[in-house]
Length: 117
Image (tube, rainbow, N blue to C red):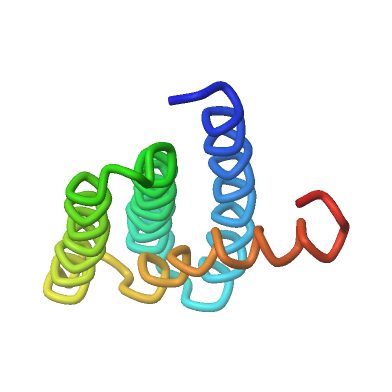
């Protein structure tokens, strides 16, 4: 991975973690289920970061079409596996796990509006 992509992945990870903390605090107060919300937020944030990490690896060499397609399928496979897991396990708050999947898009939108992209 190039230094620029590595830096963007790290920056996105920090943003996802910050939004995950805010999400945890809000949902824990609303739902009053501290442990299930915490587990869901951690799983969701890790999945969102892993998705962005794989995306960074995919766009690094877009000319390798087979590699790009494979990583595209891996990204969505990770999302599908996580969604199935959190929707079937009653110990995990599904909303807290699925909500962080929009965090990378939200962070990109916020950075674009501030002129950082």
